[in-house]
Length: 90
Image (cartoon, rainbow, N blue to C red; front, side, top):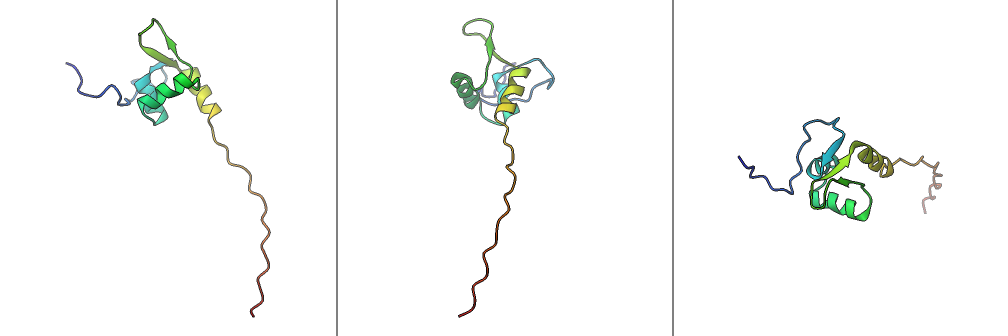
C-alpha cells in the first residue's frame, strides 16, 4: 500500500549504523528539510553518490560525519572583562 506521506517529509532511518542513507533519512538526521539537504548537495557541502542518472541519491555515514565535523561550532574561550569603576554620585 502506498504511503500518503509527502516525499519531502524527513523520515527516521531504520538503522542508524547503516553505511548509506537516502535524502529523507539525511534530512531527519540533520534536523532540516529535504530541499535543504538537496541544496547542501548542489552547493558541494554534502557529498553524495548516485548509482545511475535519475536514481536514488545516497549519502554515506563517513560523509555525514565529515559534514558534522566541518560545521561543528566550538565555543570560544571567555576573555576577562574589566569592570568600569562606578561613577560618583553628583
